[in-house]
Image (cartoon, rainbow, N blue to C red):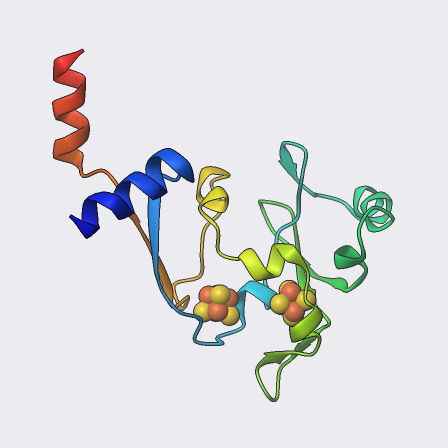
Length: 135
Ligand code: SF4
Ligand code: SF4
C-alpha cells in the first residue's frame, strides 16, 4: 500500500519518472567537471560563456579547465579540494542543492560513475508494455 501511495505521489503529483536513491559521497565530480548548458546547447566557446556570466552568480565561480568534443569543461572555484566540501555549502545555489535531478537525465547529461546517487524508473518495463498493449 505504501509503495502504491509513493508511486502515486511521485508520478501523478510530482510528475517524476524516476526514483532517486543513494546519497552524496562527496566525490566532488559534479563540482569539478561541469558542462554548462544554455538554451539547447552546451557552451562551446569563451565568448558565449562571458555573456552568460552576467546572468547568474553561479557562473562567476566557474573556471574553464578544458575543452572537449562536447564543449567547455568547467570546475567550480567554490569546491575545497582538500576537505572535499563546498566552501559555500550552506548558501550554495538552488541548482547545486537539487543536483542530481532527473531533469539532467532528460537533458542527456552523464553522471559521474563515482556519484553515490542512482535513478531507477518508477514504472517497470513490463508496466509500460502492459499500458501500450491496452491502447
Ligand atoms: S557552489 Fe558548491 S556545490 Fe555548487 S558547484 Fe560549486 S562547489 Fe559544487
Ligand atoms: S557527483 Fe554525486 S556523489 Fe559526487 S559530489 Fe556530486 S552529488 Fe555527491
